[in-house]
Length: 118
Length: 106
Image 1 (spheres, rainbow over the protein chains, first blue to last red):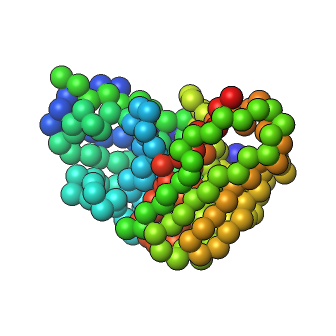
Image 2 (tube, rainbow over the protein chains, first blue to last red):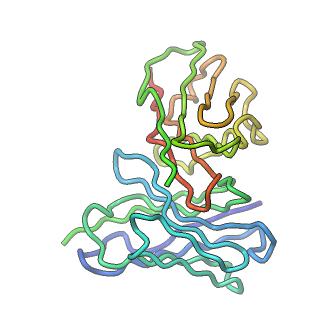
């Protein structure tokens, strides 16, 4: 059974760096074709795909947020980490991690709500 | 980036209704189109992938169609648990994108 769980701070101050961790089980990230993504949903708004890291370490980022995002993996810990620099109140959202196969987001975590406020 | 446009943004329906809503991509994405269901407080749920393939465990009242730039999700007989927001997502390019969602309510 695949499980994913997001963790990180619930409250972050503007201009700070946000670090989110996705801890997963039930699959190996070394398996060819596995892709891990971060997606967010601001309150009352649509889903927004943020970043992706593949089994081979290749990374991809949203064009609009590329300069502020870094995605990385620790295969030994079964974790994927997203950092977002210089956060702003507009970054307030529920952040999800998801396991992808090909271009399909097959399994999702429950999400973690991050509020950016001073 | 490929833009995904869903319509309508919301619709009102009743239990038992047949409902359909659409997703349009800004360029040809072949059949690299997936549909997800979101309910408040719950993890998003994959319903349909590759435009028309029903994900395991998803009720057969859900169906998807389309290829190229125009896609449709249909619920043949709306059930109380189907009141939710539905998103399409393209997986054609390395940078994935979602539509703006269609909210189905009573």
